[in-house]
Amino acid sequence: MTRTRGLAVALLAAALPLASCSTVPTSSPTVAIPQAPARPVEAAGIEPLPPAPGASAEEVVRTFIDASASTVRSHPVARLHLAPAAAEKWLDETGISVIGTDYAVITTDAGTVSITANLIGTVDPRGVFTVAGRGVFTREFRLEQVDGEWRITDPPDGLIMLEPDFERLYDELQAYFVDPTASRVVPDPRYLMIGETQPTALVERLLGGPSSSLAAGVANPLSGVQLRRSVSVENQTATVELTGLPADSPVLGQVCAQLVWTLQQSGGPRITEVVVVLDGEPVALEDVPERQTVEDWASFDPDAAPADGVGHYLDGGALRTAAEGQPAPGPAGQGAYGLTSAAVSAEPGSGRLSFLAGVRPEGSGATLLAGPYDGELAPVLGGASLSAPTVSGTRAEAWVVRDGSTVVRVPAGAPPQPVTAPTLAGLGRTDVLQLSPDGVRAAVVVDGPEGRRLYVGTVVRSPEDGSVVLRDLREAAPTLAQVIDVGWRDSSSLMVLAGDESEDRIVPYAVGVDGWGLTRMTTSGLPSQPTSLAVAPGRPPLVSAGNTVWRLTGGTWVTLVRGAEPLAGGAPFYPL
Image 1: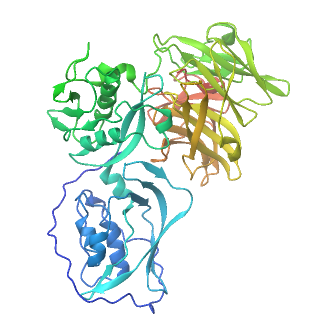
Image 2: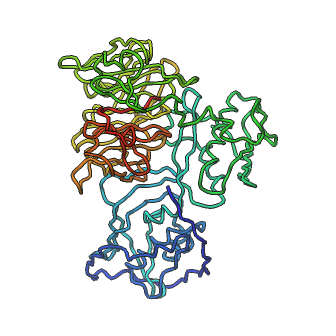
Image 3: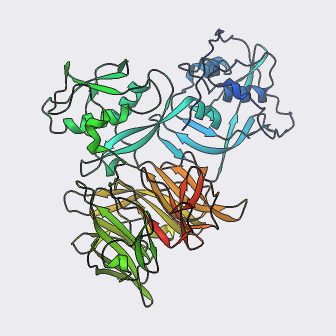
């Protein structure tokens, strides 16, 4: 998320006058206002103004919403829009409702002022964003006159903020937790106000634990740890002073990895090194300097990709590499199996491509084959239909959806095992499932009563019995219709192929895992509508279009071999 930061302008706060009151006249006609007045874009970082003398009730409500866009603690300017008792009781830290800029304001026959807007989403007190559905946001305000000026008497707790103001004032940052293999950190998006206190707020979010939707799928070695004082930043070095964790704790390395990856992000004061202090003493870990960087914890990289992880695709049932369209090694590369989709995983240590799973049509059904990347494949699972297989970067196993409803995982060298997905079948038929690079989340495309929709769920693994559950499915991009494919750009964002109603065609989009930041991507250079995609951290996106494969480079889709004719093929993917 891009944030524009400006210089805050201090306001001279005026005390709210106390006086006798009268209510909004109930005889006022209902007047629809099509949208909020235009506000200058140059106002980035400028503190809002108090209500104007003689402002109408509707204008007071509008400027109250504007006053949510303040960086001043407790929002004193917003409180100037409230009657004295309401100003004293209003709670501004219970969350944020982010709305679109085109909102309507009316004075109702009952004498209240009502606003109606498109709800973009909500942000809870922990900074967790929840994307809104396809409904609208409505609120009614009662006003009374205080010394002849309209003031709000019943403001809803929390802030109502226009989307551009939210983008301007808040940074999207990641709080990192630990995956079940303790080999990667897993991002949990949080939205924090710009400013020097951001590092402290971010560490507090870590100590508070993961968001509810992610909690069951990750570990938090910082659970129960306390922050002794605010995080200090000097010369791009952050010092984090903690208590409540033994100096010889076996999870101390994981704690440091969490803190270092979390604090070395864009936004707030620039941080390049982190010093972790436990009960007054800097942490001492073998082969790790006192001033730690992400390079010291590169093994926990949430978006690590295998060095040999070049794109692959299928042409006439044969597996090919996207580098120059050359056959992949082994029988699959020679077309021995007639595959229509495939996935490849790499050994976590060496990055060597090792495990291949692919789907082959069989009469009226399909068979999943699996085996070594460059060796013989064997049938492991059959069904009336099988989705394209998917892998993550943390385990040698492939997942598929059988017959549109049953999720099955196939560990390398082991028999298929069911994945419990208690709410998936009730949503509709699942056509696409893609694991995140860290294996903690799964994106699924479901064809249900409202069409083809995108959901994201959490993978929960039981250490006791080895069972796996896909749970907490939530719609990730409610405004997208006719979704046909999805992939993970990295561990916190997705690329989606979905319908563009204005043009009645399929186009690519990018969106955060929590639904924030939905953005249409370019189609420049494509010969026709894309039909499938492949993305991976640090790799250029691939799509199939017109039975050929294309790569995104510099804002334009080009052929795999630049300057050459398009290479025939489809079903592209990246190894993980």
